Image 1 (cartoon, rainbow, N blue to C red):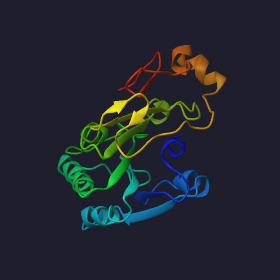
Image 2: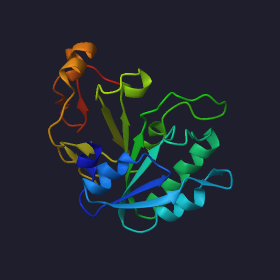
Image 3: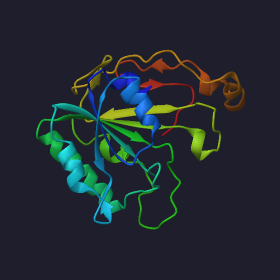
Length: 212
């Protein structure tokens, strides 16, 4: 769904490697976008140089960050997370527009001291008017309900959002129809599967059940 909302054919999406192979099916084969990669690790830690270099290029890009990372299990430390945010800020201050997809499918599955225990979304949502932060998550991994296919999309930007139009350089469009299966609705209840409604004047979607 995020691909349908924020990507068109020949757009650029930046993904650190290694990454979940289904991203190729979602973005490369289905959407026909250009996948640009950089090595996730360098010198025993996060590859700062690789990220900074990958953010050079087109005026607009999509950056996908997945922590804890599939397949490595890597989660950045607090210091590493701050550095990632600063590199993104520097790129946008040079004039680049960024949609940052924060894939939180494995959010909360951290077992080492010193690593971040919250989503990067909170650090990015109000970072810069040229950054649209998009948090992607759901109960699949956290509550061990594989196959239920319930997902949540939360987005935020320091740019003003008015009457369904972003002042940031990105305008999402409706995704193709899809929805959770009937067993999912019976298990999680009708509020979770209810039709979303749009909050007037904010451009954000909300349902009867919300998730932070």
